[in-house]
Image 1 (cartoon, rainbow, N blue to C red):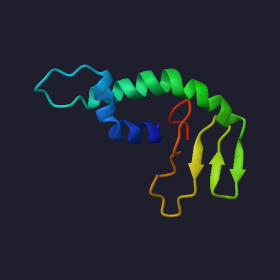
Image 2: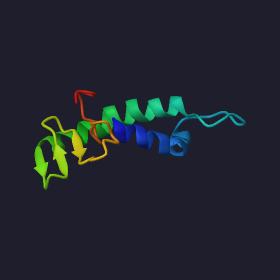
Image 3: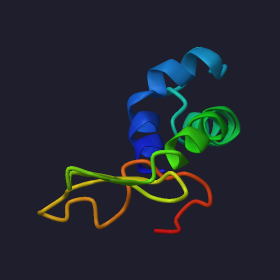
Image 4: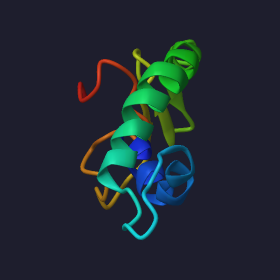
Length: 95
């Protein structure tokens, strides 16, 4: 869900277009992110792309690795990602 979080942070303006916000209030942030993550990724995107990712399970040139459940990892010599995948397919957090 790392990419989902990144997109969520970057997509607040986009989700504000689909999430009604009262005039004069601050842009919806946490609520919009929950909508983006829960509704869009978990119900639409993940069920579509994760089965495709699982078909490509394996390591590619030692740089990109696709796990058996579709999680995608890239080489991270500085461990900036903490060993987490850059894309986490369900079941979430199983890395």
